[in-house]
Amino acid sequence: MKINLIEYFEESVNRYPQKTAVIDKNREITFSDLRSNAKILASYIINHFDSSKFPIGIFLDKSIESVYVDLASIYSGNFYMNLDINYPADRIKNILNLVQPKIIISTSRYIKTISAIIPDTIHVILLDNEKWKVDINNDAIDRRLSTIIDTDPSCIINTSGSTGTPKGVVLNHKSFFDFTEWAIDTFSFDDNLVMGSLSPIVFDIYVFELCMMMAKASTLVVLPGNLA
Image (tube, rainbow, N blue to C red; front, side, top):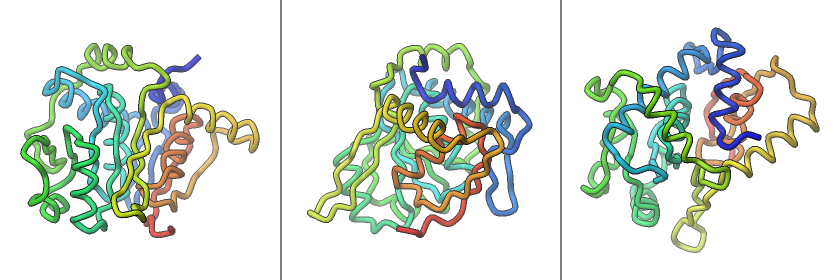
């Protein structure tokens, strides 16, 4: 019985290390390289935070980078919360005040649009800043993963906020295991699946697309997520 979603991903990487995991416009990345990028970032997070199981805010466009950052959040023993780069600053501020992530991961290009509203208590990691890169610490990652149980959070999805303030909905590993296994059995998906990802990065269906990539070694083609 699987406990955390990374177990899906590890099996896929071991089966198809050189298969294309994500296609992003004119770029692509293999399963092996995707895992390496995720583990490098996870090692940095572990090196700087003694505790785990906290939310990590991710302020990126839908891309190869957002995929490996989502994975890195879980590898580090934590859970991710994707934020839409097109959100108004006030909405981002409300979400940050509600969820209180310990980390926001972004780039210099995107962070400048929300830098004024990020509290000093939040650690910012910029992917285009080489200073954060470290060697992979597999032992530390394995220790963090061993603490996860299937009812622990895997991600947070924020509601539309139609009542005024967005609400953070916490989704656990087990829920995605159940739904992913049902989808695989019902539709007989195999390892040749190529998925066009049309969902906005902040939608729960996008997380399902990530699960299919992890579970069936599907190739994920990330497309602009403007379909609401």
